[in-house]
Length: 263
Image (cartoon, rainbow, N blue to C red; front, side):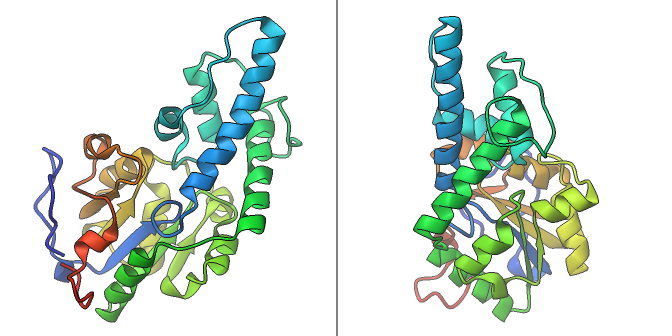
């Protein structure tokens, strides 16, 4: 893997593929084309709330934007993401409890409403993996490099099965596991470190692949040997600033033309 492209000014020395024992992948936007579905669902539930608040208070309606999603929500557990967005708008809404019914009464209720919307979209539209990611992971595994998947989503295993990619990973740590283990959300590296432990590898011998700002920051904090950012939202510089050593638009950029070896 000859890491091409600009690197973060503080990035460490480039790590060759033969110096890695494992690569840990985020799911949404990296393995499965679901990040856009998440963003669309957040937009719907936030805008519904913001519109109703505007009508109730007479204030201006300022819709949820792509920048809001990337800065405050993307890559985080849903309750943390919702809390972060509302804090950015100065909206004081009770956090509530994870058991809150979907609705607008609390941060947890809104996040649960988003979860319902997401599950409905996945059920109705299905899930597709990124072909280049599947190829890339298959090549890693052919070189005896272990692979794991992490996700803050409680639906991760369902999504992997729907995308027919479950067999590509030696370990999966999802939102259900994170809750059971009381893992803090990104940018804390806990979920990545848990995956590394499950693989039996040290972070210094593992790389992570992320598309979220909170995710690449988690990789940097966790001491992983390489933090690879996937730029699917035109925020390459922000990925570098948050800790990505290398940023590519798609993992196909790290494959040779004949797709037989990683660069």
